[in-house]
Image 1 (cartoon, rainbow, N blue to C red):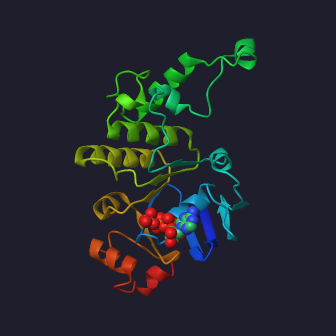
Image 2: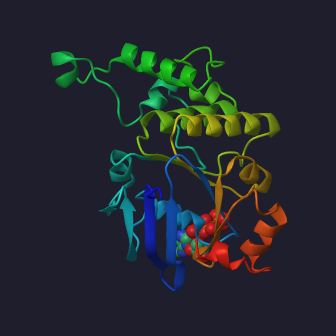
Length: 259
Ligand SMILES: Nc1ncnc2c1ncn2[C@@H]1O[C@H](COP(=O)(O)OP(=O)(O)OP(=O)(O)O)[C@@H](O)[C@H]1O
């Protein structure tokens, strides 16, 4: 049986008297799209933040490729190959597409010019940005030096996803990637998610949008009251089952609980 790429066991995170994560477990397998669903306040964001280094859990263990990891910052998680596309995107609107792709990991000119004068190698960054975007079929964007603020919401999301896919060596986490988008743009982002998966990159997708989740997910992690309640196969369950498990209206079948 395949080993999970990323596991978490017994994660606990408390904020004062609120327990956001209460012995939460998590498993992501190679090559899959795993959706994480749950009611408001169930602890989905806290789980994702723990995995992506944005918070440090009070208890529990996270393993990447079987090795225990303890990320002290999102940068450390990125260095380990975990890229996150946040809901609020974290793109800089006034910067160009290429600059945004390389934000925080700019390429410097070789030799003296780069090392001492810190000059950026714009040509290299633009070339790589263009390659990455066209690999993902995003070259409807004509001009790579165009400012991100001139793009539509869907195109911006596309740049953020392309950046994550380009630099994430192990997995990509997407927090509500379609929440702010219209129907057509959401469709494009869902296609992009499937494209990234087809390149062998596993994806964790946090979403409240059940049709989107059921369209792309291979498995669905249902989070409830700070922990994983069950994992369901979208082919075996309906959207109303998922919502019923998530809200506590219905108990999941025992085999889903053992996951
Ligand atoms: N920084 C914080 N300080 C205090 N409480 C927090 C903090 N972050 C989260 N919480 C609390 O922890 C619990 C879980 O929150 P979390 O954001 O992880 O849930 P969620 O499932 O992502 O919710 P939503 O779907 O509404 O985004 C909530 O009760 C929330 O109020």
